[in-house]
Amino acid sequence: MKKTILLMLVLLATCVSVSRAQTSKFNVTFATDLGLGGKSYKIVTPHISATYDVTKRLSAGLRVEEAVTLMKYQGIKTHDLLTTFGGQVGYDIGKISIASGNVFSLLVQPRVSVGHTIGGGHNRGYMYYQGGIYVRKSSGSIRSELGLGVRYNDYRSDLNKDKAVFYVSYGFVLK
Image (cartoon, rainbow, N blue to C red; front, side, top):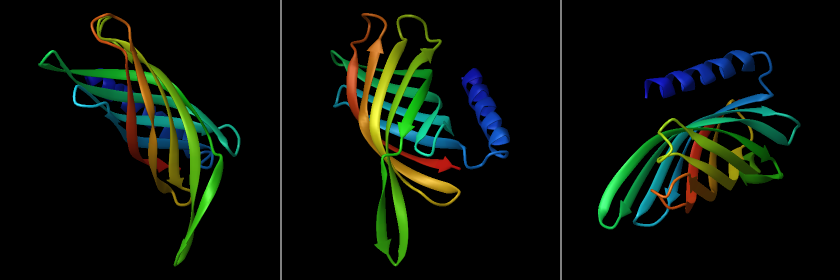
């Protein structure tokens, strides 16, 4: 747990110190994904990601999350708390303009993330694949975003079954 917090703080400090030089190219996102997997499986993944705008539309970056998994198997409730590290790629496909007194735009971005657990042993580790559509406010230094998508956890042992869940995401982007 202490290593996870230290890793997240180092990642955040690095991004913040570098982003001062090029504020339009670097983004730091604090968000939480809520997996909707039915009664027997739920996953909540608060995470931080640091991305770099490769072009005006394409962004790539790193993602660290603290995945909390709640499972129920044959009437027995268990939970897991694992740190995952991975990467993500997003592409802005367009803007939606909304006029209600003030005109503002929302960016629409499909995003793909891939990662793996850090530690936890072979029986608990998994590789995840996640894809979704995100909508975020396109102006201001702090922007909120909302996302919907699918996450697939590919467990590396027979202890847990591989799972695919739909998720809802909400977060804040620091530009």
